[in-house]
Image 1 (tube, rainbow, N blue to C red):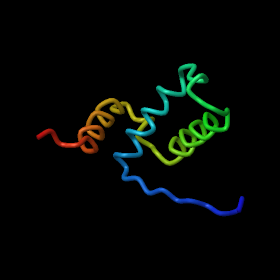
Image 2 (tube, rainbow, N blue to C red):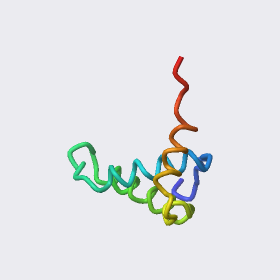
Image 3 (cartoon, helix red, strand yellow):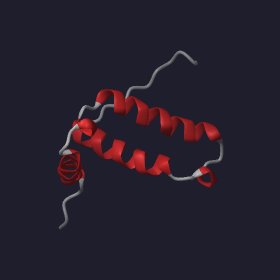
Image 4 (cartoon, one colour):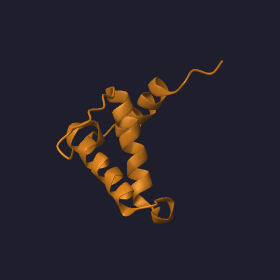
Length: 78
């Protein structure tokens, strides 16, 4: 079972929003929120995977990109 992979598809906007969230979340001590350190490790790993895939975090206008991505992903208010 260890060789089985699960793929998750994200739009670029979703990936940017998730990367930004994980960056903030992983900077803080959230160890009390986890039942096991493996849960924390997975979030670190996902952040690293996204960092390798995204070029936007290295752009000067990254904060504008994040803002636009959040707007694109957010549920519309009724």
